[in-house]
Amino acid sequence: MIDDLWYKNGVIYCLSVATYMDANGDGIGDFKGLTRRLDYLHGLGVTAIWLMPFQPSPYRDDGYDISDYYGVDPRYGTLGDFVEFTHGCKQRGMRVIIDLVVNHTSDQHPWFKQARADPNSPYRDWYVWSDKKPAHADQGMVFPGVQKSTWTHDKQAKAWYFHRFYEFQPDLNTANPYVQEEILKIMGFWIQLGVSGFRMDAVPFVIATKGPKVKKPVEQFDMLRTFREFLQWRKGDSIILAEANVRPEDDLHYFGDDGERMQMMFNFHVNQHLFYALAAADTGPLAKALAATKPRPATAQWGLFLRNHDELDLGRLTKAQQRIVFEKFGPDKTMQLYDRGIRRRLAPMLGGDQRRLELAYSLMMTLPGTPVIRYGDEIAMGDNLALPERRCARTPMQWSTEPHGGFTKSDKPEIPVIDHGAYGFEHVNVAQQRRDPDSMLNWTERIIRMRKEVPEIGWGDFKVIAARDPAVLILRYDWRNNSVLFVHNLDEQPREVSFAVGLPDDAGDTLIDLLGPNHSHASRGRHKLLIEGYGYRWFRVGGLDYLLRRTEVDGGGRSKA
Ligand code: GLC
Ligand code: CA
Image (cartoon, rainbow, N blue to C red; front, side, top):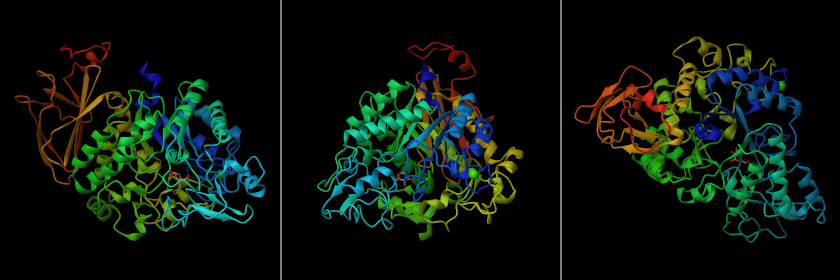
């Protein structure tokens, strides 16, 4: 039964076909190349792959500007190659989720072309128009500093159209029932081709009211239920992972009170506070963020991440907290973006220090939710700040010391491989790290293996245990008569911590170290640990008999073997 809800205890790996592996040597990644790398991904232990958009696109927003929802961009291969890929995943027990970008289309989509060419076209009402320039056309931009407005005049249409994002991404009029029906059709199509669900792009904007008179958009949450129901009818185990950077008080509107809406959402709130915690060695605000995002239906799950393909948005932090994160992780203007975030990759933010990278990933993997790993983070890839906006962190995967990191045989990859400095492919690549037992790659593989063996994180109830030291976070999870406990020291200095596990009787007296030899025995109910700078510990609570207890059926009360 618990395995049916596969997303509750999975490890998701996000990549873009364009930058993963080029099989035919034209300088652009493709499905054939990616398919050849499936054994690598399977070996790493990921259970699901999230593909960024690969449909035909003018590629002005790295594919988030789609011109045909029912195809594969010829640069990446054919629909046939796509199906071979999903089949290859299935053979290895991995699932595939894909980006669903339906807030807007490309301005090159035939729907928009017809809409702008003919006021009587049925497609006219698929977009959002205004005869006059709306009063708040210069408000609500998602990319401030780059995007000038949210309404642009179209000469051919002789009208203004609405675009929440760049001007080449006209918003779909998602209130139109035909548009809604088309969205379902798109989902149905890809489900049929073997995907297990969608990372739904920009969800709050998809479901918002749109129009020249709309001053404050209102979310139409019922749409989420419609999407969910449709998916469940077509294929019961398919899910939606929503990109919705919303306030904790709105979480349940997205999950649904009874879990009838989105199965998963990214936890942006925790993400920002996690970066603050890493920057300041202060876990207080992170603990509050965990508490604020705790309420959710039993079948729902958070997607936990460190860096993603966009900028690290710090908008939720106080000014003082933001200042600390910028100072530590993105002090230069070139590292910052859209007046709110940092565009670098994780490794350079943490000074390329493997201890800090391990700490960050260990934390991310043990916070309540399902971890989402960004391709390249498993080898501590860097960024190329010479590339514009968010492109800096979207460079090709570095496989080996061969030219262009083994990504392509072409001499001119479309997006350049990082080839100089400490993060160049000659120093950071898969082939070398495979041979080194202490590499980031082998560490990641081991930690993923262990993470999958601790379903308590995905399923259980968590509690923050008082550490009396803001640099140290202690979390305990309880599930089906089992408990696990995680200790993280975010400071560079070693710490001595003393704590009580907080279970009745002597149930918490023994802690078994899951990653090393440092078991702990309580004295008069309290554990005392010495934990090194940036150190982390994963413990199973309750002694060596846990394996026996784990086989017991679900039941109330803690058994003493
Ligand atoms: C989401 C994506 C981002 C994209 C935008 C427009 O925020 O994560 O990469 O630019 O939507 O589709
Ligand atoms: Ca290619």
